[in-house]
Length: 536
Image (cartoon, rainbow, N blue to C red; front, top):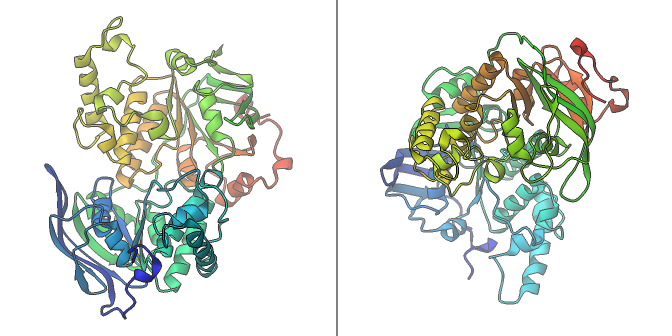
């Protein structure tokens, strides 16, 4: 019998009130002691959060529970019964499923094919697909997980793809579901939809373990929360009996400000101008529609909007990574020539630095060592040699400076970048771009997938650049981040800037209405705050 089929999950009454118990779990990777004598107990039928900074050992611990890793020592009990979990198929047979931060789906397969893949009844596919379709319909109805079974994965949203991953686990009989940073790639609405699903799962008696660093989510959705720091479990508390501030301090080991402290801006001359920009995506669909705005020295202009409304194409065009259909980008009043394969290089030479939204796809080569990524895009600079010869010593010294200044962990310039946590990968990109002392910094999703200690650090660095007279254009789907950092907020909907708001007075509801396109036809004419044209 296939151990991944739903009927293989244990059917006998659970002998324990705990769905999962871990005792004295230890795991080393060479010199790194990732998990140190970890104890964890998760009550059945609850949502249990696990929080901690990047590299705290959260994902390692859950990978041991799911069978990706084997603990060096310790005990695992599922429903009160001790098991030596050997691999993920064994975990699934015990009713443990996992939805990873980076989905494990076949893009050109349908939803149904992805769910059935690896759990077929026999060598004949048709009966498995028929049975899968029936079961998928039942699961979708029971857990409010509607998704088109015949849609291709590549054609559905990220939020829908996550639903497919959850359905895959439920189809295989999961009673305990582990979700690793599940909202890191979701819009606020998709995150809300996910939380409704998780509450339904809890109501149906499922157990959910939620790995995240977002304290608002912990407070909103979990029943209890465990805190890890530097590979150790430091506390487990009832969510109702704690606060975001207390959890942050436990995570980092020091007091952490959950708000951005900044003084008033002191804007100077216009550094970045975007005039009537029109940009299309890879399919030729126009995503940026006649957009105009400006950013001055000494200010942060934030662009708010639901993901997919043209922000990505806007940033890629301004930074020279995507050709525009028409329009102009000016730096200090001088037009930038951004078209062609070397547009990004010309933008950098002109004094514009870019932190891309997707660090893995556009900001790093993860197979390169840290020091190689620390100079990526700037390798032809005189700082790193003359002519065709690279001064590796100079490059490594600069990388070591970045590591120290930006507190990149581990402090190893020779480590492959793929082995750094997401937050530390983000610091590598930020250090590289900020170190060039650009006139204009364009930042996309600066803290996506980043833990709370690193968020505080990154926000402070952005404020420091503003206070040093730099012009900063910031795009984030995190509305709180936009409101905290920006001196002016522009709202994008359907490829257009539909309004401007003052972060000191605008409410979340007002911004949300603009982000949804409500009142778009009544948006103000091109704003003229301080004499600067904002939109067209």
